[in-house]
Amino acid sequence: MQWSDLLAAFALVLVIEGLLPFANPRSAQRLYQQLSAAPAEFLRRIGLVSIVLGLLILYFVR
Image (tube, rainbow, N blue to C red; front, side):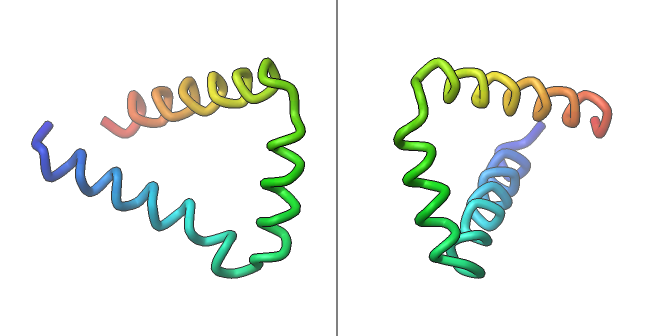
């Protein structure tokens, strides 16, 4: 893996993260309010699921 691959992946994360606020800012605001009110353990589980899914996708793609 080269540094350019890592930077390309980071760039894609930024693009994907920016899609919802750009396309529908009001929905994004509601989502962020709901997430900020969620318990820390729930957010931790969401993070863990995201990590595992990302690693599985990388495993099958690479």
